[in-house]
Image 1 (cartoon, helix red, strand yellow):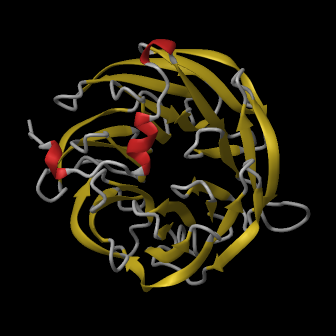
Image 2 (cartoon, helix red, strand yellow; image 1 turned 180 degrees about the vertical axis):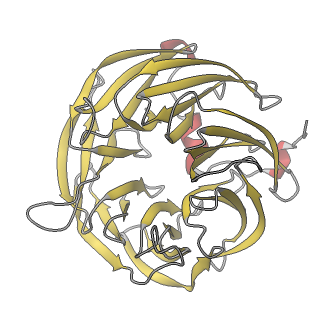
Image 3 (cartoon, helix red, strand yellow; image 1 turned 45 degrees about the horizontal axis):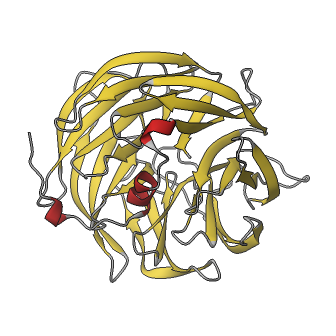
Length: 378
């Protein structure tokens, strides 16, 4: 087991804030689940009470059209939602919606705006809550928005349309922006582009939500790998990029002064003997920064990694079933004792126990829900 000194870490990142701001251990926790509504029976965003390894569905928190990704504001009063649509008002765009969180755990729509591109698949707030962002997968673009005190989203402040292609003619015919991630110091926005094999890097003015291209403006992944997801380590010095097409986790050193990424390590997720199409999906890191968990679609696995205290590199510890088919997203509960996986094609959330000392996962319990896509604790 890897021992990690807490002195090595700088707390205060958005991920750490989310954990520290969780509700009382004794009061239970509330989970919001974004779903896909274009197929299946789901009608929008669902709420669950989570307590001691049990999920109890409360109700439909908000009826919404294809709310495939959700993000919680830093003050925990509102959420923004990516409505992954191909048309909005007759234009080739999806929409971004803002909802207020009510005391009864329902959601009230504040407003919605055009995402400026088809298929918005990811949204995020900056660490102040005054800016928001989206990645438009189908449109191959990204946009920023200003957020008012009441959670109302402005029309797009900055917009970037990407062009080009990657070496895989089937999956990289054009840009596919897939993730928007704010740097730990709130000075930069990073946009994973699966189609172009890059991460775009922008300087952020959090007061206005304006983005300007950084220098360097991109990090390049190995050709044909398809960078999909990104997660910063709690220390703010290392980031982890999941590639969809290569099914790897790339460890990246983050230069916060320059806004630059440097490749340190690349670790394969899939078993050496796996034959077929794989698709790396998502990654989470525990709040102590000692372990990482990633999921891979189509071979339907959860991969556990230990994290080096000295340089953030990964060591593969375990591969196990994700408890369903096509895992889209995963989350650790606020206590860090449970890992939840949203399995799209098997219509279930899979829950595993987690040993915080060893990082090991155990057990497994399934909860039915049509086409789950995103899990956030509020």
